[in-house]
Amino acid sequence: RTCDQLRCTACDFRVSLFNDYIWDQSCDYLFFRNNMPELSKLRGKMIKKKGARAYACQCSWRSIDELTDLQTEPQLRWVCGKH
Image 1 (cartoon, rainbow, N blue to C red):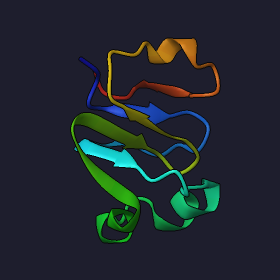
Image 2 (image 1 turned 30 degrees about the horizontal axis):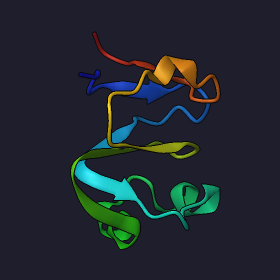
Image 3 (image 1 turned 90 degrees about the vertical axis):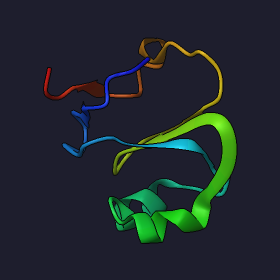
Image 4 (image 1 turned 135 degrees about the vertical axis):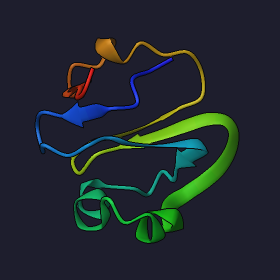
């Protein structure tokens, strides 16, 4: 379970999440910088995977397909934005 109101303190963008998707391995910083938060543009690099979740802001992204503690990844600067 995760907060659905995450915000990135590095780029000051809301973290988007997409259920049942992962990010293509060809994704890079410029892809997200240029395309967030336009879902129509992001879909080109989303891969359907049941049970997974794709997260992204303008500067960071992660694909999660198993229970993961994101606090162990210090490069992510995502915090609860509204609770």
